[in-house]
Length: 239
Image (cartoon, rainbow, N blue to C red):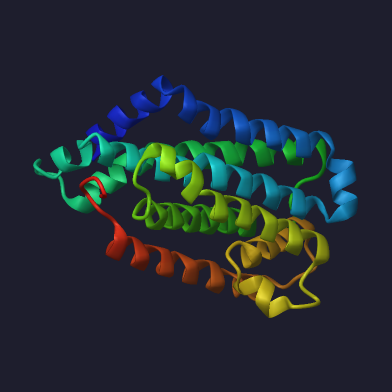
């Protein structure tokens, strides 16, 4: 698995498209939100800004790149060749997505650290860590599921749009309007509960036990995504 991960890491730094989607785009969007944090904090809160940058990295840096990578490796028959080795199917997938996951995690930590440095520290750092990890796992699961529907890297530009734009839109909706109205609906949508959890972790004012209950919808989406991925994922090119 580690050999596959190392090889994938080398490929990431050789692919300009992946570099743009994984690094430049999330970093640029995050820098914009941090630079205008006073404006966006008035719309929502500092927790809202943290959630937006988290989902920007999660959607474009992890989710989209995961789908593109797996579709590309399937198209050039690399996935099929890997299955002829001694590595298990789970080990193959883990090796391919491990570099993307680590890079996304480092990005989120770095960007949130910058946000905290120019504004204020989160009220509950441990809760924020839980929220970030749960969100990235959810985005990774959704990426594996979407990869099963994606024929090629070019096709990934279309298949990833609904989820990428959807989770960012939901995060903005929850972050700006709160959950006083339509709370149940907002929390059940992918990214809604995670946004509220990040807001509670950064802004405070909510009991830890109540905040941890917000993990349930996010983890439910992980289960749904993994279930869909196990049924729809293909190792050979789709026709």
